[in-house]
Length: 219
Image (cartoon, rainbow, N blue to C red; front, side, top):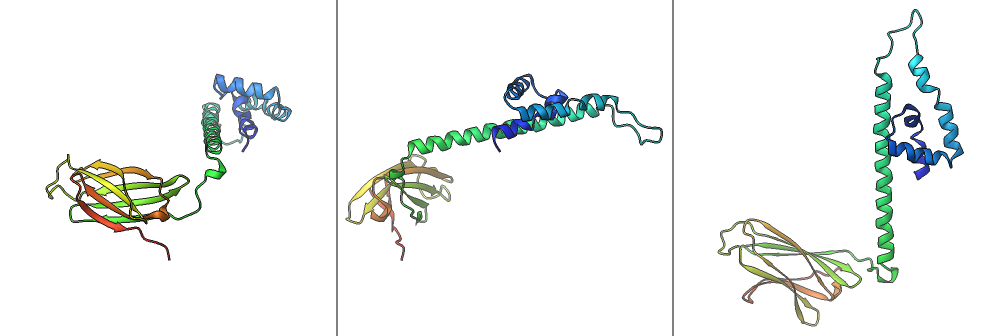
């Protein structure tokens, strides 16, 4: 729906006086440029008078509620608010799309490749690492869960995630502190492509490797 189509829905609200002052000015500015909407408003102009003068014949059913016109106006106000919210949402979405189009050149887009999830587990904790290929390497999403606080580590214990490539070179990509009985979620990054990552390991702050697992390969 275009901006014109959205504003065209305000004709009844305008005639009934249900628009806010700001929306009324906006709609009147639109009417100056749109003959079709001016014609639509012209057709609706008699409506408030007809509603006010509506009378019932002798055998007519009971008259409509006295607040019918007010209720119609309120319904139009709600509908206009919904239309205005949709317009704002479209504008925000368009701005985000434009920012993405400007900020990410086509040549920098990552190739289509499925994400890889690697799970590392021990009695004291479990770590799940999602590997997402990106243009500049790999984004790692880490979730570390501590089942309980009964394994001798305190809130000050530190851990590190270590990535080892297919040539045997290792690099530390993230560190975090233990939170017994809770879960830690964080992100890390490496310039290595996913296909160059051979294994992942969690290392204690003292240097000991607590758990290690190879990265699965397709096929």
